[in-house]
Image (cartoon, rainbow, N blue to C red; front, side):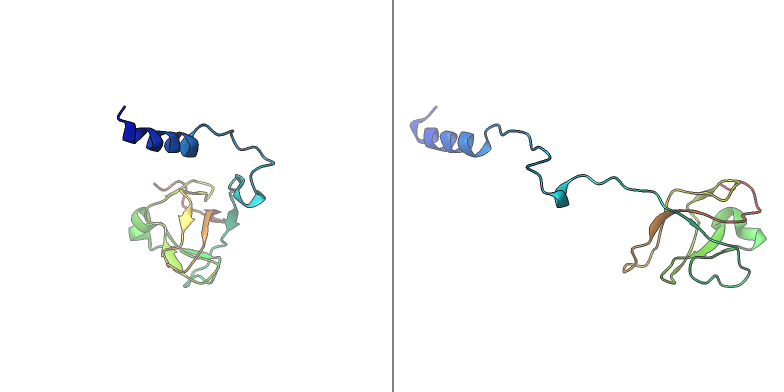
Length: 119
């Protein structure tokens, strides 16, 4: 190794050498792993534009494509176009509000879903 690289190599060893793995006592509570809990929100059926936390079925001619209209708790409307609905009304994958300022992201169940499984 050239002589001018020795000080750099020593500095790198001291800066990036093996460190002890962090333990629960050395990691602050704010950086510890927190599991994500799945929340099931029940949306009762309505026949008009759905208010917050409600759903309405799409027209029968497009139900296979758009499935249902849903309104998040903050009043933003969306359709379940890219989702699957089980016979009991469980929607997969989770529903994310398309509004950029909204934080709604939950697994939902459409209470009273009468149309069976729709993919």
